[in-house]
Image (tube, rainbow, N blue to C red; front, side, top):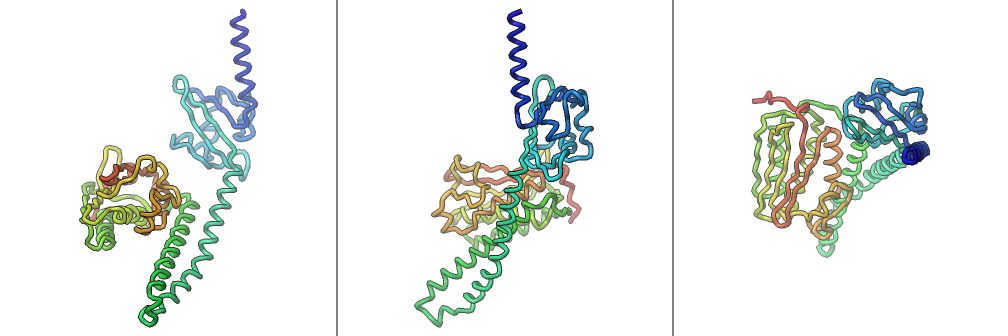
Length: 344
């Protein structure tokens, strides 16, 4: 009896702790029916214990974003509309337990979501306001002829360079702001063979004969997505490869079918990236080497744009690199976004 009392006391402690937890906790069985939930589930999801015991949770939320997530089984969302209150945003997590059961966690992230929206609005508004004065400044700088004032020629050249760099940063910030606010992009079937040829021409133009550019188009597949944004993402990967590969190196642009989809890749024989930096490369303005970045140019926003574009296409970015041997950036798309090419 003493052992039974200890077990019951331990179970009571666990239940009490779960009841005090500010996040919603739901135990689902193998069929997705509610086995138990804590009081926070009522506030965040509208499910109360024991009134909703045995309810199929996916059916209960059939016409909501929560229901769509439960049915599709996609990645855990960081920001999704709560079914109980307008304006409330939730972070959802599903954790397998036992025999095919799941523990669902829901956290109120409304405050974080509002702060993130304020940040996005601030960046977008500031970038928009900077665009016009920078365009005017750059235009006047272009009117000044260095030959007329030879002593100022180096200064004018540096001013033009920095003015152009600022314009590129502003344009990239505006692109990022737009992508962050998009839930879904306009989609069409993109002729990937034509896209790859454009990528090769851009690489050769940026390289100016300093590298060998190789094209490997082996998939024979078109891709469903936003042509403009895919071009932006693919072009960013190509320009990075050219910038960070020494003269005489090789840039390889590939499009290959895989067992579960297809992969667009850009490989180079450049400097390579230390392993400790790989996980942070898609952060805004993150630099592996600030001195090298000043020499090669770039805004530090390219890979952030790539990540957001791929997220909106339900695609994955993989990065492999070895110091002194080069890097490979791969964007993998699911079979649902592919079809056999219909172009000659």
